[in-house]
Length: 467
Image (cartoon, rainbow, N blue to C red; front, side, top):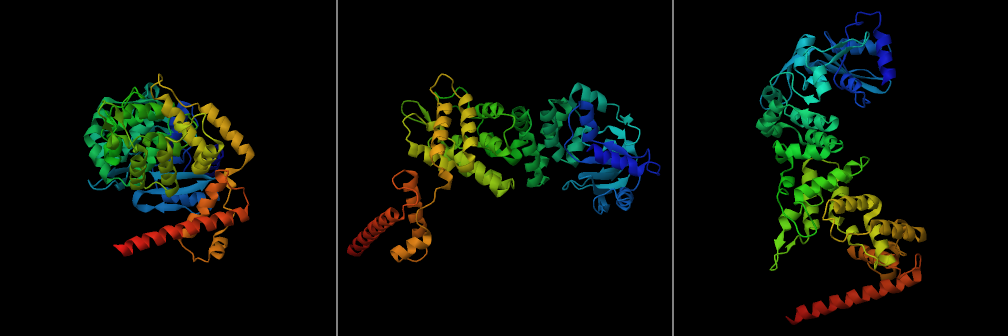
């Protein structure tokens, strides 16, 4: 980042651009806050952004030819591996059904007024380091920790509804508070989120979950009416009371678990924690004794999780991983000292690379439950897992017979039966009833199972014929 800035300064010093280029947005804000800036560099100037980008390319400062968006007056280059967005000062107008603006050239003062929040309006001269606060509120709002729009918040969110999610994310990231007028405007304009693509909503939601203030942020998304616009299934958890194993309703329990996660938790674990009990509202029952149950909520929850994450266009690997953890989230919590090594091996095999995450999910799930109730000894489980792994690499275990060997042995064609027999043999190895690599023992078992299945099929055929 520093090298890129120095390259930009050096290339434009002594030119007509010297003193006319301003850093804007996050890089200025984060420097004032004293935190590392991990995003792109944004530069604004009163002039032609495309011409500056071409100049940098000709000066061999840019790593590639500029990407120019003439309609929006912006250009993109990469300098020292850092993305640099160059913007000609502009003002914008929007049509009600789109967040793509009509752009006209403008002054720096007009440009900062079209930005999302005052904390992102500060300008820093690239060459002199002078900071300009053209709204007169940017510096004060950073110091006081306030999220406020430069102009009327209703118009701001009407023009670009994605900014409502950004307000929540910035508040969560920096521990700031959203100014009451802005908060009320979001509540009024929440329905406008419907014009935003699912991909953009997904990205903002994911970034918000990765902040320290994720719990307060999810609560705010709900209170403002934003969450119901893209994940109404989560809202249903509110007020769903639980049983003796819990002291909170499903919604509060979920947020407590999310809050308890370690700060280095990845996105999939955070999503799995948020969704782990999403099946409870649909499965809540009360028996004759007045006891509350949530039978099969992990199965129903997995189905809902897949539906929501798919709708939000999460990558398949994220959808599959989170769905699996929701489906299996009770498994680790069922551990007790009577589990055999075979049961531990099954858990290791079924959880695969997500085992550590599933243990962490169980840890925060139990931490947010009723502390007076008995709980799983996760330290003992981890000790047992390590013990079993020292004896055998469960993830490397394979069926002693390949599919081709099974077909040749039983004289059967390719098909589902071959896969079922392979899985059966693999399970026998996992259970310890068949030694790894024992082909002869595997052949005898495969023959036995195959003959039994043929016998069962033959009996069903005779019964059907009798009818």
